[in-house]
Image (cartoon, rainbow, N blue to C red):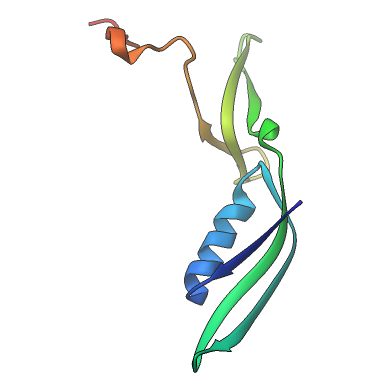
Length: 110
């Protein structure tokens, strides 16, 4: 477990913790907000304990076509947002292990 202490403006601390909480490889266990006086100035800070499990970054998304074919897409840092009863939005980072930009690799033909 890691312990993290953030100092700075409240809005920036909140924004950072929000993004950290959305990261699938990070789990926040406890968080404490406080402030202290240093050299006559008030300084806000937040402390939290986190677990980092990078092996959980990759997720396989499966889609089924109308004719029953299963398409599997490996994605990094997947976020799922349920929009309605039958609609779920998936967002993640795709990668191609065979891509080689140094040799002029093209995804689409000219």
